[in-house]
Length: 310
Image: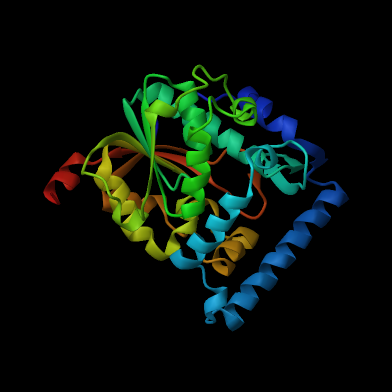
């Protein structure tokens, strides 16, 4: 997969992640090994509970439960609280360093990689599937003033939160400060369109976006994974980018326990060509939470397959 490189340097990753780190550990530090073992024990227990009583509707992750829970979350959460460097921390890992950091710090790294992808692909229009409260769209549109952005979101709460920001004179200062690279246009709202819709049946035309991306959205779509991936491939004209916890990076140990216990995304990169997406670059070399390890996958749309299905 050497055809493409988003050009993100280690120093850039550290610079955007470090402000959210509260404590660092060597991997052989007893305090860190205790954190790791406690996490592993918790994930094993949750997987066992899932096996024993997972048949109960309240323990299943469905599109209905996701719509209900995330709608409430987006409605209740402010950007000031979401993006703050202060607040609860979670165990994170990058290479040989363990950390206690704000979970939102990983989002900042994901945005850095997305910026690198967009800068190299130079799309004219971009779609985010599962845009939540619009954070990714606001940051990316602010960074790339020549691009139009569209977001599709399942939840009414997410749509309402994003629309409230679009009604402001400019992007909230918390969003501008959170951006991993300086924003060029703090008033990008006329280039952003946000629509409510389901990833299993996107209300969009075939091959209508130069680039389609997801960022920790497919992880919530295991119930509709095959349909969602096929729809992403259908509406993409040239490329897709996914920051998701693919199976190859979460195949064993506590991370696999977490996926099974929570009905999380189990898609494999090796399956992507089957829906018309050919990976041209992938990396999971970025800071991540212990419980789940996302990575970046950039794909080229296989035109022959997409045209044969038209």
